[in-house]
Image (cartoon, one colour):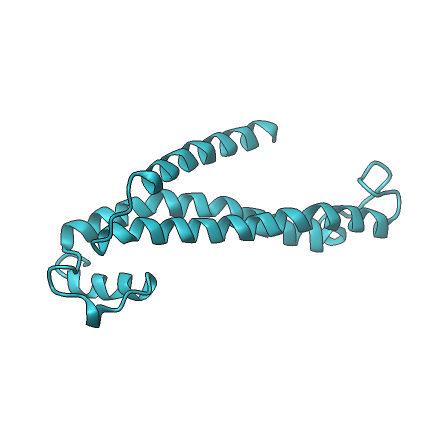
Length: 150
């Protein structure tokens, strides 16, 4: 369905990357190959974004809604033995993690903007590509470690 619609994809990426198509010459606009390459580069960033999104979901479930998730008893919970103490302890631990998750999403957005630069003809160097590869390896290691601790 997307094959043959490079102009529409170019317009969509221009809006997402805050590019002004009116100032772009036809030679500066990305072709179908560059659009496809950029879409493939976005896959690891999208998968990496699932980690901070999961942290935000855990913040809501285990931080904000802790008494609804864990019915007690709270004798061995952080902040226990009272419900209020356990909720406050879990909420207090979750807030900095939620802030870090939002920061990670912001950094992934900045990395995506840097990667998109080459699509529009800007020189970006190897830094964003190396950062994407390193972050992908780190994300895989984090997920594996998380699964093993369950």
